[in-house]
Image (cartoon, rainbow, N blue to C red; front, side, top):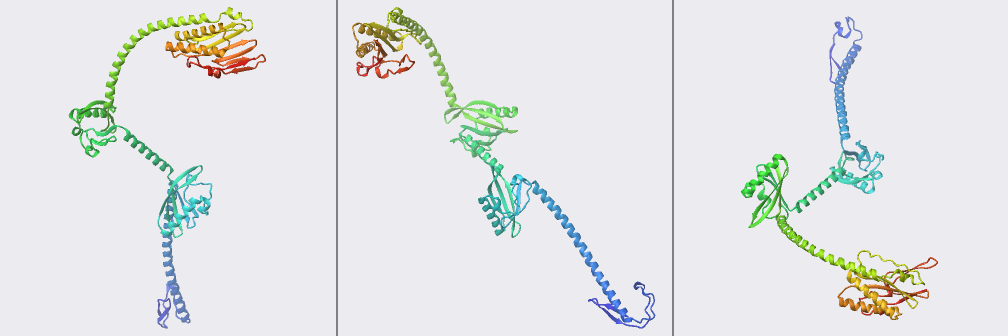
Length: 516
């Protein structure tokens, strides 16, 4: 029997014969001479052929699966390597990286740096409304939804409190899928602070340059102008007219040679160089000072200041010093005159001192007053002048006077003598009314100071004691009364009188206080 296998796996017999089947070692058949179950054998052969076909297909599928498995293993390994690299990259990044869904729920946090977020808050599975302040939560959710809606990256800046410090972040939100985004935020607080400091420094430097009244130039070793910063209101030459030109083209030969000499010296020694020169500008002689300092291997910074005012002030100072020398000579001459004047004044003061000592109450006069214990002492504080006190006893009445003339010297001493003599004369002539007495003394002093053309005046208080009663009149220092029981009274004399010699009539200002 001869057959073939159809594409559908069936066996089709194409030829049959009753001849003995030859040996088929490959099928385990040695020799068949009688073949009683021919049909069964044909069916078995068909199944064998079909099984072989299935085995062949399985082997082919097995090889395909093995190839697919190998490819999957390779892809898995590559993905694991890529994931490890990404994990390493996220670990090394200074950014906060998180995955959010469309409701703003934290799905994953990829950052390991806890300084970028608060690690005490469990975020995974929670929404931004549960973690962040309301204003920041609304901003986060709005950006997440915008990125998902537009499928484009959204950028934003925002602030968050980290501990007790407010930090500033810059973030980019990019869609990963239709429902998730990746949030990458960077702490820019230090950068923002540094930027602000740089801006402030730049503003300060700009302000300094604007107020500095100097020309500032950068010149290389060959004398070429590299930069030029003029002071405010400088109109002689523009920056565009100077940059790129040579020193020898701009300045007069003698000045350019001098300036280049000091530029080379500054570059060679790396030290500050200073020199002065004069420049004729539109017929006016201008004095300038140049300071040169290296600012690079072959570049120097040249700062030029107009010192014309300083030069003029130096000339004026020299003139002033000459005038001072002359004035000093005149002062020496005046000193000689003052020495003579001082000798005269010293003599006057000595006369005043002696007069003052002569009219003071004597100890014998004080001891003669039986009704009172009186002790007096006077020591001039500085120079002898118009200090006055006196004690008189007349018909059982005790009159104590104390006063002070303004100023010092002989003139004040003379007025004090006038008062002393006037008071004694009035009391000796029987004047008992202290108010009248004080007004009369004032008229005498007023007339005499006008005749003397003296600006002096005097305070004077009169204290009268009789039969245990005290009467106080006139203006001077406060009166202190100490009672037997220890009580202390302080009496202000301001309302009891008026300085002598200022008004012709002071009777309306004079009053009296009585104490028992």
